Length: 209
Image (cartoon, rainbow, N blue to C red; front, side, top):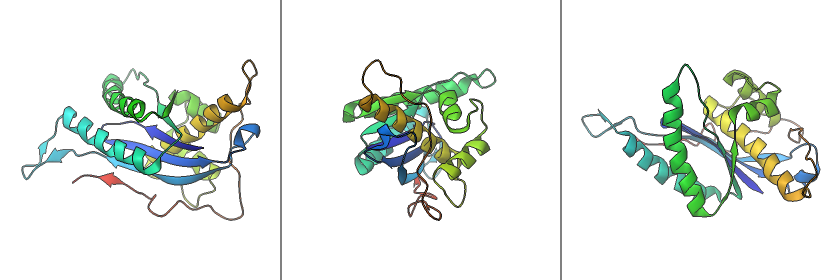
């Protein structure tokens, strides 16, 4: 099973694609490997005048680049962070909702299974703390995949975390009979030495000038 995790945004959209071992649903840990990860970096200005681009232009860019990402990675499941409300930054939720709408529509049209996850759910699954700060999430992903350094930018770590939690939900849902409770533990299989990110993770960044 291949899972693509998405951390939506109109400036940076983080993504993390992982492969999940076929037998993972029957285990208490997730033997997962990173296929590709990075960020879709959207334009902030256009043309020789470097005039600021509109929200609609950014959404158009996001759709184009995300459709390319779906075609390139060919995921079985796409896990996307759900909208959340932040009292101090109410506009952040609105901006994120714009990006999510484009992403969800593209996923639907591609016929790929969708999993939506609340930020606190992802943070708690990886760290035990539903309010974990970004640096803690980066360290958690570094430990999960036995990486030499924390993934950067933080959007990449968030996307990989979303992919991991989405993988567990999708795999368990497919394997556990209706009415039974799935295990809640989460982790990754560790090997000998460091498992380095694939070439281009740090990062395979889709960017526009």
